[in-house]
Length: 501
Image (cartoon, rainbow, N blue to C red):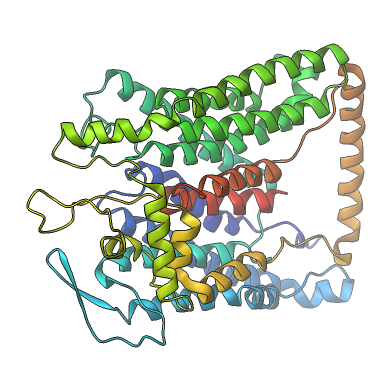
């Protein structure tokens, strides 16, 4: 009997690009939060390797499809041409590709020339995108472009994936983040005051491999969403077989240690957002639990925990200016800390007003900030600005860098990302069998729910999106998306959880 071709099952070759994307997510935070000297080239290489893996997988899928296409078409169980599906998916991502071209066009049209610690104005075409310092912006532009290309191709319906693969990759990424949390706790209490006990830090606000505590908070909060997705997935199984925790046990451990790190590192933004996330998580549990007594207990615990977290996050906020000034008087160097939020925001708005249409180019905020800030700190000789980063809203910062055109292209590209392919009419036979299996599973789960008064919670995609929205809230007063490791994690977790749904 001649062997038939499985038309609806993703080819194992697609594990290659998804696995390479996960490798990027695993490696990026260990490169000192994406801020090591060679971090940008390494992350760009991994992203481009995953892009090549996608192209190779699609071509191999087309080769396998072509070998059975005629016979499957005659039998009525065939699937569409993978190359045609891939091409149609590319059409929906055109705004992202235009945005990538926008980035490289600005890189080829720099507005300034660096000489030592100074930027010297030079002739450039003001009617086109630009960057302030090509040498400074180039590594970041190459990484951002490769990451967006990876996102555009992984979201393509032709780049299929099995749910078991994606869950395994998410579990590996969660374990990696948990190891980072343990590493940070260890060096926080037993270290020598340096990053990983080896790399000098600009101040004491580092944690794990991240130079800045709020960047760690953003990274950990993302994986709180992954952990919660696993927790709700395994919650019905816990009540049916309490001794088999599965990935839900890992999820609870991760949530505990991530939450603990926010308090250890004294990240008020992290505590605030984790408290909000805890309130949302409790709401999900509240919707699941049917017992009135359990609901009251959950409500009391949630109000106490969230109220305490909000108090710790907001109680001493007014003392920040005094403590920053004290550190300036005690040291000749400038600590990597928030100086004046309104100053950074005003500088971003001034940059935007000067070039509202095209913006100043990606990663141009840092080199241009001294010229726009009236309170910028200078060294003791008042000769050149001290090497510091100015903290402000990511939204204002990127609006000044991308302008209206770049921001519109990026936003439109993200909105139009292709949705994962769904089972079509060509798969009716297998789809009916699959639905029958799902109905049986749902019946078993319903039995567990009736016995244990439990209903299913939200899915992985929803929890990851909630955490990304919380990072968007953090970006109103801080810069989570300016950290390369956080940016890579946002893209990879969003794509995997979206495909998993």
